[in-house]
Amino acid sequence: MLGTNGIEKIIELDLNEAEKELLHTSAKHVKEVMDVLDNMKTPA
Image (tube, rainbow, N blue to C red):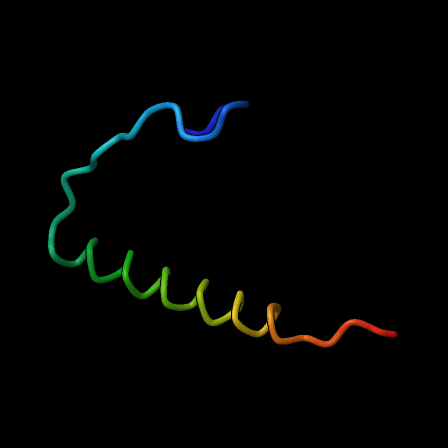
């Protein structure tokens, strides 16, 4: 959980294999979007 001071509490979830795979796929897509945004050029 995030709060005003950053991470305040870690909640661990018991995911089955299908859920873990979906989570990894989602994380991969988020990383790809972040990489695109990081590599965008800002106007001078």
